[in-house]
Image (cartoon, rainbow, N blue to C red; front, side, top):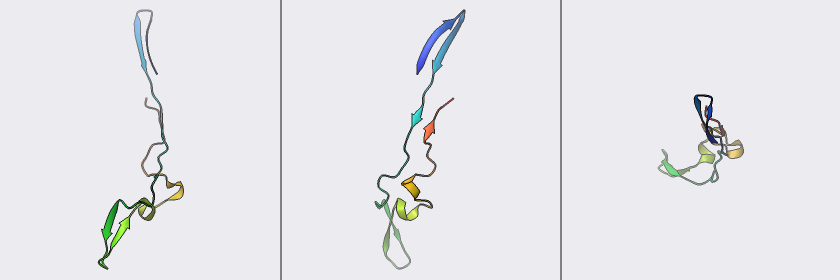
Length: 69
């Protein structure tokens, strides 16, 4: 939202925004890397096997609702 106007001799400007996101992994089982183990095998690294909480596949450190001030 944006606006501009005057209130008497004072000029006013308004700039406001809002962002809503759904921060989830859409491919939780897809391997994005491979980890070399002590048994000399390459194990796939994915969101599903490395995240500490895979409930609803919500990504860590993501903001769902953003309303800057």
